[in-house]
Length: 450
Image: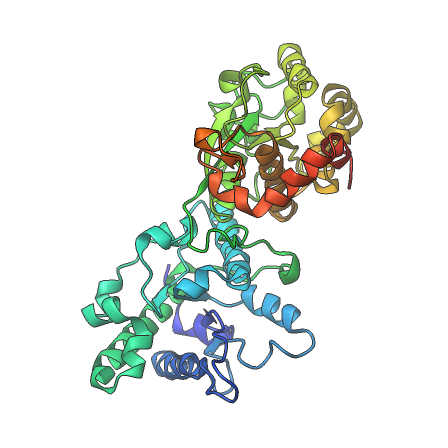
């Protein structure tokens, strides 16, 4: 719903956050290459002020021009990313190679995911701008999935980007048109998306939406596969006396954070891992889980979301116990529960005891974040905070156990290389393989470290 002018007047949050990759200076004493980005920012702010009724002194936008070198800059960035209405990434090859830009994207994307989880309505509040055109095959998944018509800003804008238009005087009119249209889009999206403020993330600890930087693969790669498996009853077979309001016709419909969340936990997890440049499929433990074949390497990392009430079914509990006895370190277990669910609170001791008896391995091994996630995540906010760490742990373990092929022709001059959908991640972790080769027991040691 579009905001009224009275609502806009009372809301003095920045209309947009301009996210850009800092360009290094070339040559001693050379000009500041980011001065052109600053000019774009000033032009956008001027248009936004003209198109809205923001009062004098209220920020039309935000860019980190002055704060990167000062104290508390990460807190300042986190605060603005938690309150701004629209996120404007300046696309360029350097942008998608920047871990800092990926952190900014991720921090804002979480707000949109929570908005959709609570309202069950999508919130497309990212308005991309072309600084330097980027070939589609170089876009990471979060950028590739954006539905945005850049041609509405002009053909020359699409071929040369804002940098080309701002640098060449003959394109002055095209530049003015593109910036004006971009400002209009920012104001329109800000008023219609309605993404509210949230608690700031710890910006320094936030993951990058583009995945880990890979010096051996400087070009962006497509989404990596991951599976989200849900172990939960349906509303037709919930334990006796359990409120069915948290369940649906399929296990994938389980919504432990009702009524705060209006979407199933599997869908929320799918959105969160997509914001980390993964492509997730959501499956059911009851219908899709298969016994481990020790002769076959894993096909992908996996998240297993377990409802503690699912353990009331003895057959399902035994199958989960058998899963726990198998060596699957590439599967991270997360146990969402709702501290506002009175039934779960009342039965907490009994449910926890059964969980500990069923999944003792997953509750005691792995990183500290993985152990905490397996012992219980009591809110949707906590779920969003811990999931990136759990996903990263599952991905690292997958890379350790995935099949590695020696170079063709029997040559030993090249390192063995990982094949398959996660191959692009191998180069970032090759040092881990070296350490494992030198220390046979390193894997078991790592599984028990915090």
